[in-house]
Amino acid sequence: MATTTLEEVYKENPLSPQHILPIDFHSIQEVPNSHLWPKINDSPISDDEKNKNVPIIDLLAPNAVELIGHACKTWGIFQVVNHGVYLELFDKVESQARRFFALPAEEKVKVVRSASGATGYGTARITPFFSKFMWHEGFTIVDSPLDHAKELWPHDYQHFCDVMETYQKKMKALSFQLWLLILNYLQPSQEHLINSFEFIGALQLNSYPSCPNPNHALGLAPHTDSSFLTILHQTHNTKGLQILKKDHGWISIAPVSNDALIVNIGDLLHILSNGEFPAVYHRVLVDQTKHRVSLAYFLGPQVDSIIVPIISSKDNDGDVVVPKYRKVEVKEYLSLKAKHLEKAFSLIRS
Image (cartoon, rainbow, N blue to C red; front, side, top):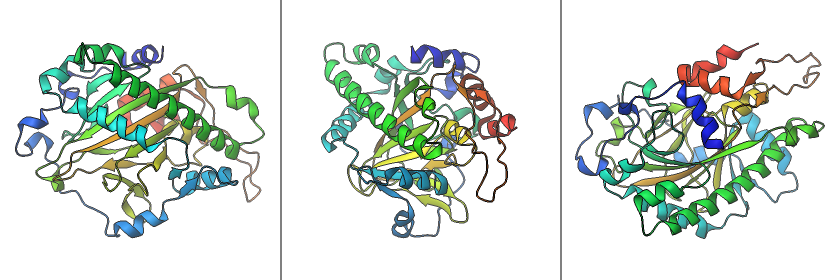
């Protein structure tokens, strides 16, 4: 169901084959010109100093609602601990992801994403907006990966499916828990909003192969996520994710522990919060020696949902609050973003 509705949106903005299929990273010794970006400028602040400022939230804390709300307003990104997902499961999912990405290119192409597809193997959907390609390959799963797994491993697909489905169930439950905490902060009196959306969850396995020239390559180019929120797991002691923080430049976000999860706000929650929560502009760097794998779970509403900004009657100064964005159907917003990327916000301003 979720796959079909997403594909309805993507049919209006199909990608060309050159913007779907990654290059064969196993077969190249240097970065080709097609993937060679201008020098990647890093923030001058040390990694240790940067990470200290990113909110770290214990989900068992009695004031978790206030902590998350403040993190959403001031950063748009935070880390969560004591979230109930065991470290062993992260290891299992990463192991199966590496199993997939280690396959020869001719095997992975069997499950390549179609031009208007929502699932399968391919590059990031933001690829056409940039003149250079990214040092990245991904595999997107919505609901069951059974058909794709059978294509890849006809006699040995079940373990891959079991691990991915278990992880999706855990992430769906956690993302809904976070959604309720955020909603409670935004407008606790509006209990009817709790059940006003049907959700789509999507799991994205990301691969960032080791890169001969990491100073002139990007794993993912700067962008915001379209969904309500993203839950990211990246391996401990590996860094790659960076966010653009006003007055600070690019800030690296490294996990504080093996089982810490990074949560960031997406476009649709930015709109729902009437701009109170920033949609986080982020990018991913690559490493010269390490092949990095990360797991991203996206939570968003069904495409026929309507997003109406939540506004309080008065702000802190007593002034009447007006909506910054008009109400918008998710399908319309996703189509606007597929055509205009970050300019989509300006097209739905009130």
